Amino acid sequence: SPMAELLEKPEAEWDGYLGELFRVSGTWGAGDPISIQIGDRNMPVYAPDPRVEEALAGIKPGAPVEFVAEFGEWKGDYQWVVRASSWIVVGRRGLEPRTN
Image (cartoon, rainbow, N blue to C red):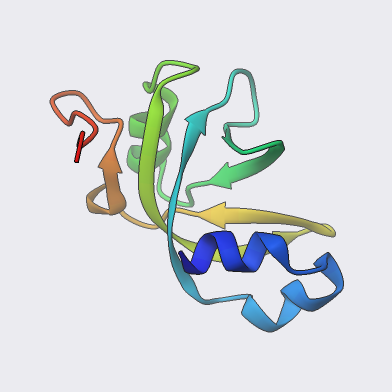
């Protein structure tokens, strides 16, 4: 997947992908700030809209999650930016992960 390809690249090359949209999947992290675990990498997730942040905050830690996000950066740290609740594919109540 494009997300996996990005994360395999050296971080020195990541700036070239800022602002691009990715389909992101992993395991929802625990704690604050909200985050996603992708393999051995834990990455922050940011939602500028409080309603989207609330939807993300309701996901149970350890749950499989999938969303569309803009690849972003804040104070030197890379993050996934979720701009709309419709971008959350799996994780919201009533949305179960696909098994195929």
